[in-house]
Image (cartoon, rainbow, N blue to C red; front, side, top):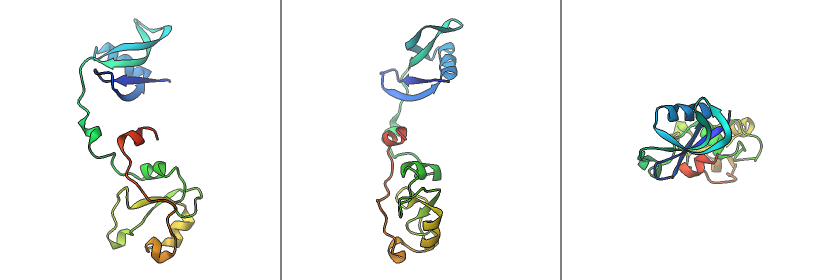
Length: 147
C-alpha cells in the first residue's frame, strides 16, 4: 500500500498515513484531497497522495523535547553500526554503566556489537580503553522523521 502525506490546515506537513486511513479521514470529513492519482477512485473518493486537515492541529509538542528514548531508536540513530569498532550492531551499550547510575537516555547509550559490548562490560569507555567513534546525540523530531 502506498502512503499519503497529511498536511495541517496551514499546509505544514504532519505525518504520513496509509491510503486506507486517508480514505477514512475523507469519509469522516476531517480532511480534503489536495493531490490525487488521476482517474483512480475508491468508491466516490479519488485515491489521494496528499490530504489536508480541515481544522488546525496544534503541534507544540514537536517543538519541545525530542522523541522518547528506545532501544530501536538508538540502533536507528547509529545506523546499526557499533560505536566502538564500526561493525554491525545488534545491542545497545550504556556509556556510563547502569550499575554506576547510568540511565536509559539518548546521551548515555550507543549501538554496539555483541563482542564490544561484552568486552567493555561494566566499565566506562576510558576504563576499558575503548574510545567511542562518535559522541551520542539526542535526536530531534525532524531528524527522527528522516530515519
